[in-house]
Image 1 (cartoon, rainbow, N blue to C red):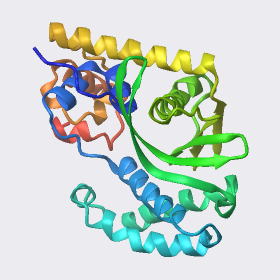
Image 2: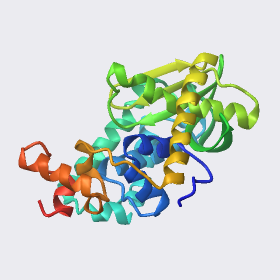
Image 3: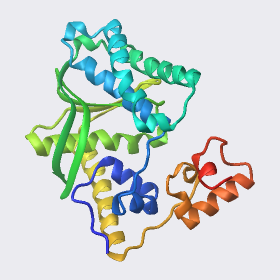
Image 4: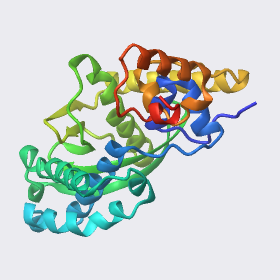
Length: 275
């Protein structure tokens, strides 16, 4: 029988809740799951912002960010996953423009020169609700009201009903920071570089709720591993699953959606399944 992982992350929990079968392919069978264009765009933006925040505060300007973007670009351009996208010159220019637009939007939210950055891409191993937790925090700031956990997103803000779920990420990071260093952050915030900030105070009730949902997912992983029963949860995202060809339910879902004109033309599953 499969055994639960040694540590559990926000992304792993999210994937399990999205589709247990896909989680098994990724985390039990250790199959690769190549990042798509959106994920690679996020990696590029995160890298530039990481480099920017490593600069002396007074040097965090848009001109410097533009220079750092040019410096960081070869890391993405030469990445095998990016090459596999087979983007032509025009598509690559559009990719870089979208990345730069997201980076430049940071100045709509704050003046980076006024931010006291304590750490970027901070790796945190901790115990959260009895669960072995691992995460990488995009940015940890010192503010007048205490530590602030900041995470960047290159997309647009979620619908109001989806906000609590999204905020679980920064609340879990806050819980991990508290366990790791004995200091509770005051706030957690998500910078949706497309359009807005979503922020929450770090309260006892908020932490309890987020940690409770995380523990519930971890318990679900344990039960699925002990029985080796991982449910396939089908839906539109089957079109973007790297393992759909090995999932009977996922294959059937994509076929039905394609036949009914309900699957986007750029869904990778259409190529994988010859549709």
